[in-house]
Length: 226
Image (cartoon, rainbow, N blue to C red):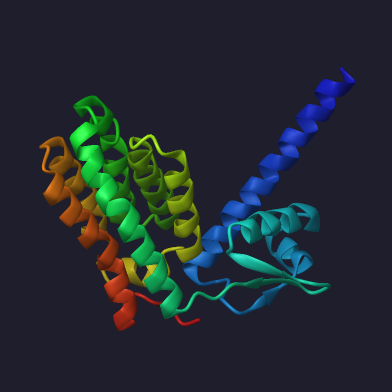
């Protein structure tokens, strides 16, 4: 009984930490938490109405993802990503994902690709309803599950890490400008090309998709003040 009770308490505690981490990610996306700014766990805990412990643990989770960095005896600073970083992340993702999508188009079954359609539709729906957190989660799952069809787990881990570090800066502004929906619809376009066995077309679509938002960042149209 004692061990089961302890396990239940740990589960409840971890769930609270996950909820706080989710809220912190939302604040990062919306711009409420700004790159370069320093935040304390007690201060954020007061905003959330919880104790400092789950906030501190959630911030450590975000630190492992490269979203924040601990500052000794002060709290956590939201990490800044400059244009050069974003260019390099996009370049690496393009080198990895474009040829991989071409290979998957040639080897994946129609059933495997069709299994991704609900996620592609969820991305479009989230964009249409301005649900940025839902968009990011569905987008993450779509891309990583698609890449998983290559059978290369390390490749999936690498792209997952790059996605966390780039964080889709400027997503709020992109949404408000009405440009998020066209980007979301590219997922369905990509899926249709792959189902048709058009490897070259799928590669071109993926290249365009990865460069689409990055080009907006470069022009400053999709970036928030930070």
